[in-house]
Length: 416
Image (cartoon, rainbow, N blue to C red):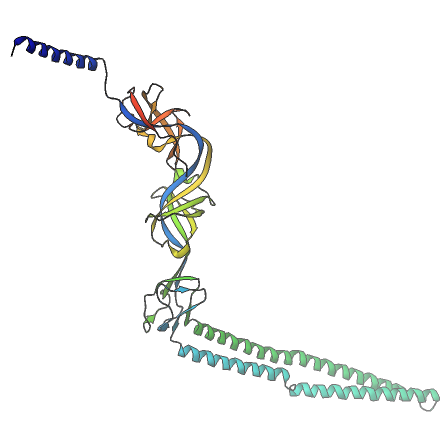
C-alpha cells in the first residue's frame, strides 16, 4: 500500500478525535429527560390517618346468675338472635317446685286477709255495740219521761221534784251513751286496724317470697340482652354452668367501631362528628363513618390519643379484631399552595426539596416546608410559588443547574 494514503487516513482519524474532545471540553453532555407538573393554588383537605382495630358496636357476655347443669341450648355459634330471645335453659325442677310452694302461701295469706276484713267483729266490739244501743234506748226513754213530767207540771198535776228527777235521769243516760260510743270508737280504731294491718303484712311477705322464687326460676332461662350474633358458646348441653362465668357471647356488628391511636400533634385537629373512612386490610372498598369519641387523656406509653370511628357494616363484611386504616377529614384549607407528592425529594441538608425547572429547561434545587398531605398532593408552606414547574419524574440524582428535557408534562393530577 502506498504510504501517502495511509498518512491521510491517520490524519482524518486524529482530526475526528480532536473534534470530539473539543466538544466535551466545551461542556456538551446528555440531557436528562424529566416530567414536570405546575405548582397550584387549590383547596386541600386536612386528613389525619392512623392504624386501628375493629370492635363491635355492642357486645354482651351472657352470664347465668345461678349454677346449674345446662338442660338445652337453643342457638349455635354464628346464629343471629334478637333482644330477649331465649338462648338456653338450665335444669330448674327444684326452682319450679319452690315457686309453686310460694304461690300457695300467697293464696293462703290473701284468704286470711279477706277473712279478717270481711268477717264479723270481735266479741268485745259486739258487746260494746250492744251497750251503745242500750244506752241510746235509755236516753230515748229518759227524754220521753222528762217531757211527760214537764207537761204534767205545767198542768199542775205533779210536783216540781219529780220533773227534776226526770231531768237528772236524762242527763245520766246521755252521759252513759257518750261513754259507750267513745269506747266502741276506740275498739274499732285499735283492734280492727291492727288485725287488718297484720293480715295485709302477711300477704306482702308471702308475695315477696313468691317473687324471689319466681326470679330464681327465671334465672334458669338464659336470654339475650342485645340483638346480634352468637360469637362464642363454650359449653355443651349437660355440662355445668357456673354463676359468674359467661355461658355465651353475643356481638352486634351491624355497626362497627375502629379504635385508632393518633399522635398528639395530629389529634389536636380531630373532634367528634368529623367525617372519616375505614379501609380494610384486604383492599376492599372503604366504608364511611364519623368520629364518635376522642379520648380526653393521652396514652402515657405511646403519647397518642385514642379516637373511635363508627360506621355502618352492611352485610357484616367487617369483622371485629381486624386491622384497618382510618382516615379522618378534620377540615379544608381553601387556598393552599400544592404540588404532587412525587415532587418531594430528600434534601442533602435534611428535610425535603423540589427541583424547579425554569424557562430555559434548567433545574434549580429548592428546599421547601410542607404542610397537609392528601390524595397525592402536598401543601407547600414555603419554598415555591404558584405557576412554577417542578419535576415529578426523573428528579432523583439531578444536579442543581443541570439542563433537562421535558418530555411529558403531567400537569395537575385529576382530583377524585
